Structure formats: structure tokens, C-alpha cells
Image (cartoon, rainbow, N blue to C red; front, side, top):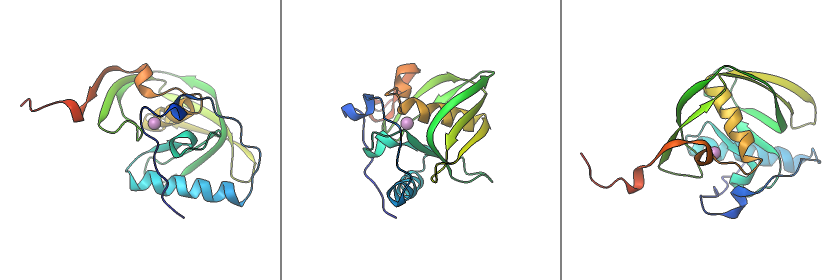
Length: 159
Ligand code: NI
């Protein structure tokens, strides 16, 4: 396993639509493992392919609960309900936070690292993470949806 560089705001790669994953091989497995390691090292709850420079439809999510790391290959949201409004950030936008409204519950259909299809549901933070990461696969970043984006790095010295 190895840490990957995280692509940052301003890189056009974050704005492209990713292509489906077609090969379920050792390279995919190590990419998913590297993504999880990179996410953990950065204290994130999710990371998507383009954030490590891979223009493929895959992401990992970890809400630090019993479910552990969730690998999603070619994910799609197949059901969504409810609503939540809360603060959101992104490993590609360090120091930035904004208020984003998302569904409270989502169900995702995806493939695992071996190509087997499965469905997974998430509530609250997990639903938010699924939506945020799947948006990345379509070139959508949270700042596009957020209200009141705050940039801690440019906040100055207000008390
Ligand atoms: Ni993000």
C-alpha cells in the first residue's frame, strides 16, 4: 500500500466526468487500498478516483463505524429520501467548509473489487459521504452546491 497525492482545487481533473471501471484486477485492488490509506492519513471520510488522479468511477468511504471501509466501484444512487443540511468539506479543498443540503438516506448500487454487484444504504453522515463522493465522479465538487463557503486559510485574524 502507498499514499497517493491528493489532487487539489484548481486542477481540471476534478471537473471531468469519470469513465466506468472495466477491469477488476490486482491493480484495482491496490488502487482501492491506496485510496483508503490516503483517506485515513488525511482524516477524511471519503475519497474518489479523480482526487488521486484516476479518472475512473470508484470511491471509498469510511465513517469510522462498524462497517469500516466501503469500496464502491461504478456506484449509482438508486434511492434517496429525506433531507439534511450541514457542514461539508473535501480533501481537495483544504480549509474550506460550506453548508450543503443532501438526502438523509440513500441507497447505492455498486460493484465490489471483484466486480460483484451489491446494494448498500447509508443514513446521515454516510449518506452525505456517498453523495459527495459520487458527485466527484461526475466532476461535481461540494463548493458547487454549498452555501456560505468559508475559507479558513483566508480568514485573517478576526477574533
Ligand atoms: Ni471531496
